Length: 153
Image (cartoon, rainbow, N blue to C red; front, side, top):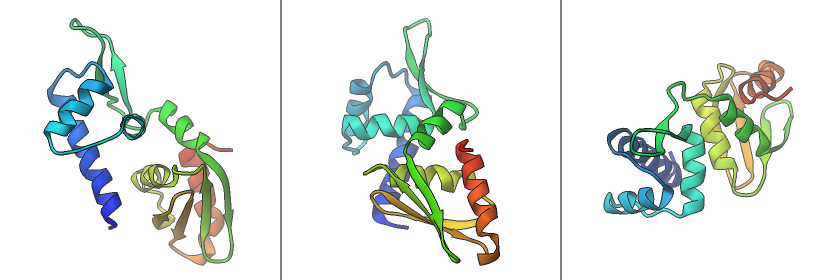
């Protein structure tokens, strides 16, 4: 696993832990708490992380606070991820998913968590994801599972 992906998983884990154990009201507060835990993050990255984790603000007695969606696979998250995709193409061996610049890592993480049975894994760059199918015979099935996972017709 790449260092960058390890950092994302670690950051996501810490964010989930913080949101589960504290009342966090806004991103500025969350950035400060993350910094106290040794994680420096920009607001843009944090915003993307919250979307990927299915975190939303919910009203409480103390005001609106961040909570993790219990289902973890909210339709709004699927829609957001699907909007990042430019195209899905394939050849006889691989499926290539093109995203908007800087979005491939987040989309690949979502796909990896979706546990697409016809895929053995993904490899993401800045705007391109290579999806490796279990078999060259299952390219079409892999594409259909990808689209289904993302809510794309």
